[in-house]
Image 1 (spheres, helix red, strand yellow):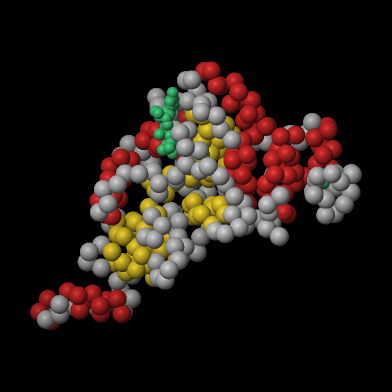
Image 2 (cartoon, rainbow, N blue to C red; image 1 turned 45 degrees about the horizontal axis):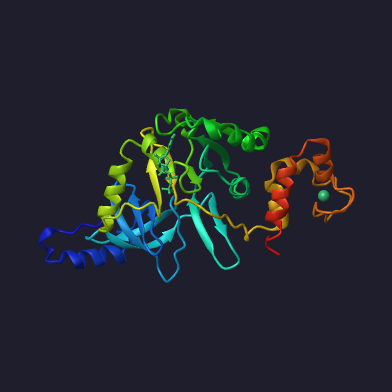
Length: 313
Ligand SMILES: Nc1nc2c(ncn2[C@@H]2O[C@H](COP(=O)(O)OP(=O)(O)OP(=O)(O)O)[C@@H](O)[C@H]2O)c(=O)[nH]1
Ligand SMILES: [Zn+2]
């Protein structure tokens, strides 16, 4: 134990430097807001500090565990990255967009209106399956009955695959989701306008206050939804909200990884006539046979071929 007597004549900055050199200033925390070049980190003692990565890269996502050396002003350098258990991200051929780290569950939010893309849904599921994350689908705005039947029909193939679909109207009540958050670190993904912010506000009573706290720590005063944020439910479970997604590139996944992330394909993968079958026009394709027999959805193989067309080579 190192002890600095108050009379030692050290300036607090000198003491701080000493602590830093000894590694005693290092604190562990979780990234609760990712702003690109800097991050808000909730230290394990509850304080929020603004952390900066070393170098030019921005390699962290909401949910990441890091070690930081905070200074007296609540800022500090991130000095260590604790290994992640999962990383949900999207990518095109040029860059990656990190969505959430250490999440155990993807909650994909769609609504009865405006219309949603089932391709985006399948893409997000592929990314989550690849990370062995649980997947839940929320069908929001069920009070708007005009789009309900069409939305249910679009989700039917996913329900048939065992992905649970939870219907709700987040505007009036989001309690149906509450038990499903228990024991999970969840990440909410969806197109803009599906009601993710409404859902967060229903689940996290002080979400607005938490946002304000983060904004104050940042000194930005902004309350935008353009950044990822990690909240805690009253029960203590983590839930990460991220900006609405328009596209979900999977350029980081190989053909085989995408194949395996279509869970209904797995049972057929060693049954195609050709070992390197692309499930497109080849004869004797077990997955195409599955479509003919009604065990595989025609829409899902269509989406698969579209997604796999841009896979990692
Ligand atoms: N009728 C109805 N409207 C809802 C419901 N949930 C959200 N809305 C409305 O849908 C619109 C979009 O909701 P938001 O919560 O802002 O959606 P978001 O997904 O966070 O959108 P971004 O912030 O753009 O990412 C708002 O006008 C909400 O009031 C619901 O359960 N029923
Ligand atoms: Zn095949």
